[in-house]
Length: 353
Image (cartoon, rainbow, N blue to C red; front, side, top):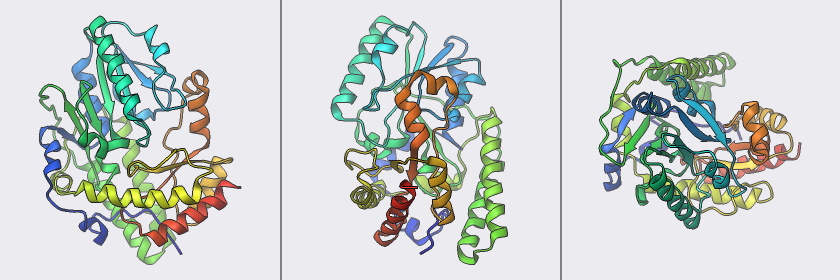
């Protein structure tokens, strides 16, 4: 069986999750951008130069850091505990008035208790440091966020990672937030859409030339996004699709797929249980690069989502170990149970290499 992560926005499976639902009103109050990076850029421009430092988890991708650095805000890494929560002892001795703290839930692992602890910690800190700003990146726990209260000053989502959208990032503020956009530029969206169309062609034809071209276009789009310092709005097509997605159905399918993987990969799983449908299913393997290459050869693409800077690895051994050994296994809502069983079986082989 040949499996590849699907990317055609018009696939039958994606059409099946399109339905207007009341919870999609969450996006009515959001600033919608082509990516989460653009959302962070707007926020960084808004907060600079009054705020000059942002604290980010040591387990972060550079796309979360560049928007701040591009706008004169220095990034400071903080360590995580083995429960994937912030090391509050580290923050306690370093936070000062005017700092920004960005935090996130990893794969929905955070418990109600850890959420309460975080809320209490930052509520107390805000009494001491009145200009402290908090940003809650809910990309990994999007569905959970739809049911939760708004505790941070800002809430961030990279929605393009949850459905097959060529672009899409969202930012909400506890107080009404007026979006600021640069003139619309569809280069990123068009490049991604072209890559997605070519990938669909490759899945039908199997032509290696087509595969090389869609990979090149994906890389070109992401590299361009990383160096750009503009804030581009989400395309009309992606906005339309975003507001029609039935997130409850997405959640049900992802959770079902993750449960299949959990049963097969329990000894390698980072999740202690499957509480919700995760963005990816995280596993740790002995030889990350070897496992990733083996899976790619068998049509399964498991990205390394947190390539770290040396300073981040050195200051948090736990985060460094996760970044060096974790693979993100797809559990997309477009996969059926048979496909998940195939993926699980191949990951088992890769994990033992």
